Length: 181
Image 1: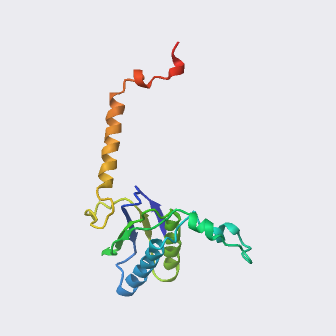
Image 2: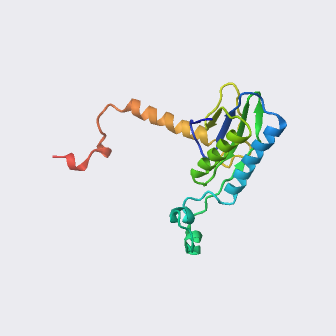
Image 3: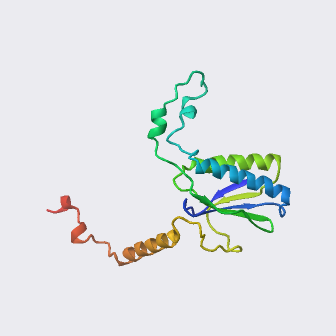
């Protein structure tokens, strides 16, 4: 299973999978169960990198002192939403709003899909983020921040305009005060 990351927005992320053939109903059931389980753990705050006490303890967990204060002090890390799994020929895709969950949620998903690939169904390619030209998307109605990608694109366009207008000299307001004689 090849894993690739493309343009990534945690609040509006498509996850794409390519298989050697269209999936049957049994294979779809395994895939959808894996995604549903992953999402429910994320919705419950399971992917919170601020509270990994057992992981940080290391291999010796016997008689570990778990700090409820540290757990309560961690900022919430909750997934917001997930759309239904969609299929088109040898492709499947799923939209997710990862919310404030930490990036290791993606590691957990990749690990789970890797095991699914080893045991149950072959996944040729897993793409995190981006779009596929041959399978267009529409604005996700469940998106918490719809249109966020367009706003980012506009910001990038404005930056390009500012760079084009810059003649290489700092303006009076932006001059380094220590460089004046």
